Image (cartoon, rainbow, N blue to C red):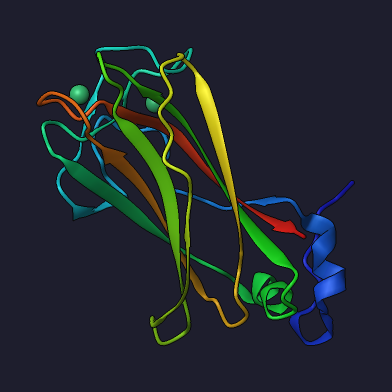
Length: 181
Ligand SMILES: [Ca+2]
Ligand SMILES: [Ca+2]
């Protein structure tokens, strides 16, 4: 079926919800550029690493080095059509990522989000559960309600060290989806 955008003047939230769930565009979601390009360091520090294979076919993942706590974020702007849906207060965001927290006592990983309005003021927040996962290839999904008037979704990934000097909350392949609740 051909995908088309309805005319802006005529569009309603219901007309656009047919496109949901909708995958939002992230730059460098799986660290495969070999750098943290596209992301902003909000706390601590991040680099990419390739010691372990978190995901089949993945060369790199995000690694917080020897920091105690690190947080990496990326802004996603919503468009006119999403705004119609968001302002109907029926939209949720799902943030998923793959993590592996290794070590004698595992370190943690988490996803969180800030919702910002047109003036880039924070109008809502969501905080996921800290994951302590020793299994390889574990995908975590977190869902949060998107507040009306949200125009930027600032998604964060976090690595939390509990043991040793290496912060082993590794994260790979971040995805952001908008869903109708
Ligand atoms: Ca990767
Ligand atoms: Ca550690």
